[in-house]
Every structure is written in C-alpha cells, then in structure tokens.
Length: 251
Image (tube, rainbow, N blue to C red; front, side, top):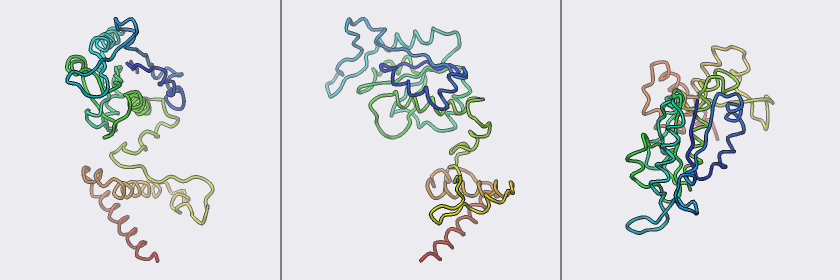
C-alpha cells in the first residue's frame, strides 16, 4: 500500500520506523512518501501561512502552497488516490473505516497546522475529513500516524500472527478480552482456570464472554449500537449475573 503524507514536519514521522509499521516498511508492505508544502510556496522565506480574514488568534495555512502540494502528490503516481484531511471537524475514525481504507491501494493524508487550513482547500481538494477524537492537538501529524498505524495492522503479512488483527479491540465492534501471561500466580491473583485447561472450545467461549462483559462495563455505547445474537445475549447475561453475585459476596 502507498500513502503520501503532506506535512510541514515530515521528520515527525520517523517514529513510524519502529514496531509493526517499521517492519511493514522494511518488508515493502507499506510505502510512505512525504510532501512538504514549503517546497511549493513562492514566498522566499518558505512561508505557507497568513492571518485569518475577520481577525482572531493564530494563523491559517494558505490555499496555494497546500493545493499545489496535493496536486503534485496525486500526479506523482498513476494509482488513483483518495485525499484525506485529518481534522476535529471530520467524522469519527472507526475500526470499520480503517479496514475499508486498508483495502485502498493508495491514500493521500493531509496534516493541518496552526488554526487549520484555508476552507477552499477542503472544498476543492479534500475528498474526506476524518477525526481521531473529540479533542484538539497541535497538528495533523499525530492523527496521521495513528491512522497509518491502524491501517498497517490490517495489511496482510504485517502482524506476526495471521489472527492477531481479528482479536484486536473493535475488530468486531467489541473490546478485547483480558490477557494473561506467566507467572500463573502473582500477588495472590491467579490466571482464570479456563485458560489453563487446554480445552480450546472452552477458552474461546470464555474469551468471547469476557469481551462482551468488558464492552458492557467500559463501553456500553458499543453494546447498544450492536445487535447481539442469541448466543452472545446469553453469554453476556450469564457474565453479568456472575459478576453481580461476586459483588454481593464481597465484604
């Protein structure tokens, strides 16, 4: 997969050279190319921002350098590319959307800075706006890196185990089940016996039930949005009942 990144601070993306994304880059599962709007401005000082019309604090990225950069990025490759702007005004980025993007051969990601970008860039050159959360950060670089990391996890061969992505939180609209590793007993806390049983069907059932329970406890909004089948409903109700009984027994 090819991703073109438009940013005033391309060095920030060096963080992607580590971990899963770094391995995907080295194995040529993912190709990143950087484009800096400062290379496309006529200003002798490389300026790409100006004061906002109507007054107010901060600066706004200018139309022309950014529009030229987007055009150059799109025309650098024959593969069609969707232009994505990471913005607090965008639709919430979900795992479902990430999986869809992972099927794309090429994306162009635009990182804004300052108070944002000239609205006319959005109207003419941006295909979609997406947000990583209802909060504001200093620029689009970190949201872009989050998106690239999430997409990379969905690329065939990127993870060490082919089933790893399927077990991630949100892969089915639910949170992941609890995980344990050695030692078996620590600080008087033991690994659940089911995980030590070697009975794969029972382990799968336990993990599914715990995933449902954890989602119900921590993100009830996800459960409300999801239509649970009869088996999942029964598993969840059983887990809730068991949890309530344990709480009643606690001093």
